[in-house]
Length: 123
Picture (spheres, helix red, strand yellow):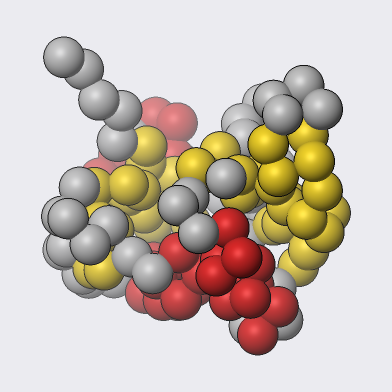
């Protein structure tokens, strides 16, 4: 079995960590200013955050490039209404309010994170 643990480059790991924890009810599994692992309630790592320019990774050196070009962070959640309420309460940058995606046949909404990454939150 293989499982993907996505790592995205961010400007402020601690601030982005709190942002994702507040939106998706994730927990810190690592903590720190240069790297963070965020996990669900069962301890499964859902997303990792890496500070731009740390540890000499070639794809994470240029914070001036457009963050997320060619990337969508697609989160499937068990309680879409709860996550939507979190997004509204936190006054996040909403791209599209909840709607039915006709291709997937699911309810979803779309927003941007602190670094401009495009997130689809789906049931």
